[in-house]
Image (cartoon, rainbow, N blue to C red):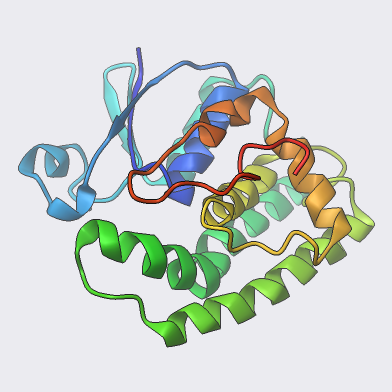
Length: 221
């Protein structure tokens, strides 16, 4: 069975988990404390980052590379559209969430509130939390604008772009940092994603010391 070395609230790990689950590829989840830089884990990925997927006798690292590999090896159901223009839009939005959203929101909220405690690396910086709380409003509004013009974020079908966005938002929802009342369109979109069988293991995650809010696993939140 494939093995995914991961951290439960990592949006990059969650994106890979969603891709595998959507394609019904079962895998064993092994939680690692990558920040401790254990030699055994560094042998799997010298960059010292998660996720790392062990599959078919090989080790794959970096979430985007892993997801592209999964898409090529397990093409059904497809998470990438057919035309070059459509695929470019999916990749643009995946990069938007994994780069811009991550730097402006996830790193300022999730990492300050949770990761610092787990890593024992200091106390949360209030200025970073305030910055993240402000920036997420812009991103939710941008998502609302996209969904005003499309059924899904990148077009008229669900793609990897939706999983990338949902991976980040679900991690933040675990710590109640998403205002779902800001946009009915975004809330409806997340409800559709959240109801998919692929999302079940995500909603079952529990991080010791950080209990999820009651609405986290509620499909009618």
